[in-house]
Amino acid sequence: MVASDHRGHGATAESTGGLGIVGEEGDAWRAIVSDLRTVGDRTRAEHPRVPLVLLGHSMGSMLARDCAQEYGQELAGLILSGTFRSLPGSETEEALASIGGEIAERGRTALSTFTPTLFASFNDPYEFETGFEWLSRDAAEVAAYAADERCGFAFSAGLSLDWVRGVRKINDPRHQSRIPAALPVHLAVGTEDPCNQGMTLVYELLEDFRYGGTRQLSWKGYRGARHEILNETNREEVQQDLLSWLEKHI
Image (cartoon, rainbow, N blue to C red; front, side, top):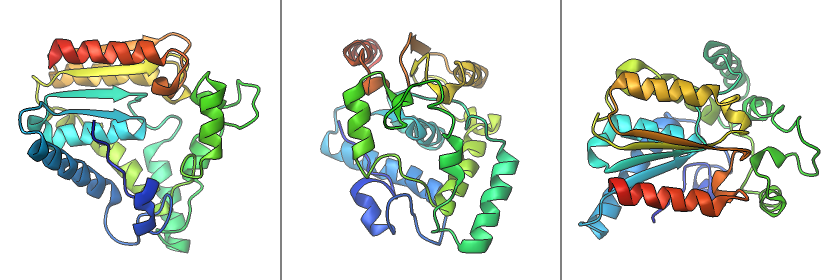
């Protein structure tokens, strides 16, 4: 497995201005999608006889959808984990106007209120110690997430704006239909993930794939699981299901 360290995330953030920051110039979303292709190209060069499957989680699943729209012919499969069709509770035009105002006032590198506001209510159903209980039923995983400064940080106004624009792009039926119809696609989500709004945003995404012509489409909702299904109490079940999917389709 090869992982991409997105701009503004992880160790890469040191070169882009800090966690959540992607600089003053350009479209960070489009740049990250291009980065994913570069990682894929290098992986194919190092392992020329191995099929390339792209797995994206959460925001990464949206980036993976964009990558499949642009470069899907280079993939052997697409797995979307903790995915959702659009940003929950966020009207695109209103979000663009609000973030645009922040950029006009303070620039693209200033931290935005967008992501903290977007996720503010997700923990409301839970008694909490960290505020991140919506991520997993595994208390140790939640504590580790809360203690890691590279997790749960706010995005800059620039990255927030580019994300919202990217979501609008990937949900455009003209772009959705560019994903090769023969590309196997699998969705894996938790039924209690607040990001998918009671599975509504999963069902809508499945309809998009069907309407776009995807012929090998499958999905599974894990009852009771929250957002981080790969770090959930039933993660062994999730991992085995994904391995079985790979063995069947690849």
